[in-house]
Amino acid sequence: MFRLIRALFTLVILVVAGLLAYNYWKGHGWTLALPSAVDADTRGDVAGTVKSTADKAGAVASDIKSAVAEGTLTTKIKAKMALDDLVKAHLISVETTGTVVTLTGRVSSAAERARAVRIAQETDGVTRVVDKLQIVR
Image 1 (tube, rainbow, N blue to C red):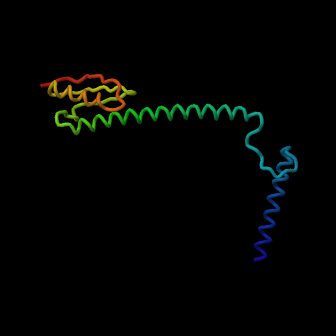
Image 2 (image 1 turned 180 degrees about the vertical axis):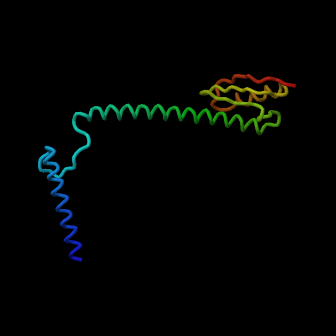
Image 3 (image 1 turned 45 degrees about the vertical axis):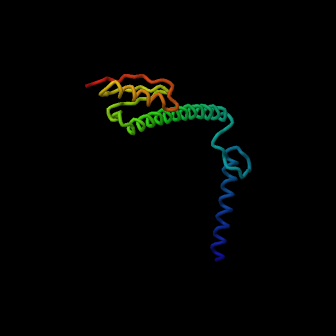
């Protein structure tokens, strides 16, 4: 038991002595402080890099938020169309850009077309619907 304690104590003394010697030879004096990976000259560059990275991360987060919002609108509209008896949702494509929804595809009647457009217009968050539906009989 005492051998283990003596070995650990010796190891600690060697590590402290090595750290003191390393700092002395590197010009930091007789200190126990660990050497810094960043010196004073590069701290400004690092700060600029951090700010740039933070700005990019903010832009990416904004893009993700926008994409999620667009996907949510598209999903809401497709779900409403799938639950509607008149509209054949599997034949209609819904694309969302911001708050503008574009409907493309084929419908069998003017009534189905009007109902699909109305479903999209009545969805919360939609500001405009672009109707590119084709009536095929």
